[in-house]
Structures are given as C-alpha cells and as structure tokens.
Length: 373
Image (cartoon, rainbow, N blue to C red; front, side, top):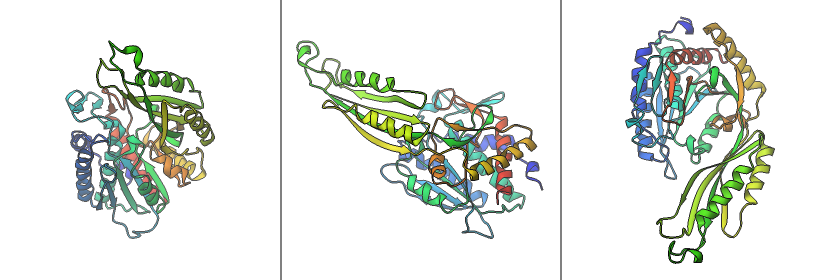
C-alpha cells in the first residue's frame, strides 16, 4: 500500500483529538500537564509503541518517550519532537470549547500544538496497521514546558536528538502551510523594580513607586526594537493596595533576533538598563537555528516533492518565533519544523485549525517517515 492511500478517517481523528483538547494542560500546572501526558502515553501504547514516562523536575510536568517497533531498533533514526503544554489556563474550555464549525475546528492548544502531535501519532498508527515498516526507527518525545522556553527539558531533547539522524517537529504550519527551515534566537529576562512605600494619599510625596520605575523601563526596553532584534514585555505584576505606593514590581521580557550576534548585542543592551532601582536576570535562551543547513534542506526538498504529489505547494522559511527545533537545528541535526496543522489564532481565544489539514498533514508525515533513509 502507498502511504497516499492510507485510510485516514477524519471523523475518527477529530474524535481522538477532542479528547486531547478537552484535557487542558497549561505549562505552569504540572498536574494538568501530567494528565495530558497520561492520555498521550495510553494512545501511543495502544498504537503499538513502547512507552516511557519521564518524571518532571523543577515544578514542571513530566515527559513521554515512545519508541515504535523496528528491526533496527536502537540505531539512529527519526525523532518526532513536540510539546503538550499550552498557554491557556484551566477553564479556557468554558470560553473556547472544542467545536467544529464547517471547515474550522476550535479549542485551546488545538493549533499549538496538540493538532500536529495527534496527526503524527495517527500517521504512525496507520503505518503500523498497514504493515508498513519505516526505513528508520521512529521515536516520539512529548515534553511539558516549551511555551515557557523549555526550562526543564532542553537537555532531554538535545540528548535524545543526538541519537537520531533526523528531527521532525509538528509545530503549526505557517500561513499557506509553509514549513520552518530555521528559527530566530530568543532570550528571556526576569525584571524587578523597587520603590519606597508610603501612603498613597496622606504621604504620596514621601514614596517612590516601583510600578512607575517599571513603566519607564518598559518604554525604554520596547523602544530598542529593530527589524533585526525585537524586545517586548509580556508580564507585569506590582503593588498590593491602591492606597499604598508600590514598593516592588516584577516583569518578564523577551527578545528575538535573526542571528546570534544580533541577540548577543541585544542582551548587552538589555543588561545595561539595570541600575539601583531596576534589576535584570537573564532567563532561558533559544539559540539561533541557522537556515539553509544542507541536511535540513535535503529533507525540505523531499517534503516539497511529497506535498506536490498530495496536491499542494510546500514553501519553507526561517521563523521569527521559537520552538524546540531551535535546539536540534542549532546542534546541526537535520530538522524540519512546522509540519503540523494549518490554522490561525494560536495563543488566543480564537485558536482554530483547518479541518482538512488533519488528513493533509498526516499523509505528509506518513510519507516522510517512509522515505527518510
């Protein structure tokens, strides 16, 4: 049987994906992420894989590693790497329930990236049912903390990737279905400002607001953005009472850069903003994954050929966002990213996928698994 003829059933795929979407798994809720990992572990085992649950650390959820049966088990093969955490807090289902409306399907994390993960599992399941053995052994690794910059599982991902010849990352496709062949470098920063407390009414002039200090610094930080290196502050917490001048405020910032040199210069500019009232601690970093690496481009050309056979054009681009593909690509391991579903609204309450892309991307993944040697 040719992979293009595998009997993918859209209704069955939607039913299985619904179970995953309705198991909410925000990054900072380790118990919730572990519930999602249990679901994935069961489905992987039911598909025929040997599954290992890897405990979490540093307060994060655990991971799942699944190895599919193969005559050359243990030899370098293909790693499918995905994350099961989402940016959506528990309760998001109340305002963004799993639902299909015509050619679109909605739900928290459905695009980023449970849809792509599920498609990858379905591709492997159908290959096994058809009795088709991939030329290379396949391992699936699902991790719990990508949306936070992968603070607890980077070493796990890198060490696993080093054992493989290729890495496939089913992050969501870009507009038009494009794949990712490189990614920008990313650095995160923890910010803290301090002030002098006083009564906000009777003694206002005696105080100095940490919130005001932070606000002025935010303007400085975001004004540093250029086409080559951007800066944004996405989290701010400060003060406890409206009638007290705030003595402390904290925030989180992120910088993205096209090259490692751009990022290094950006980090230096950010750290130079520190003073007696404002501190900056550099957090997790994603290294630049330089585009156009030979191994990656060879995989991309194969994916383009398969896409043409399936009736669509696959383009490739370097992405101004990060994924765990940054780590494997930066190691020089041939990596092809954004192989997941098409859609829009990721990280919002309008997150949705194009239903037709489930079968499209499953066929693309199945063919890649059968043709990579």
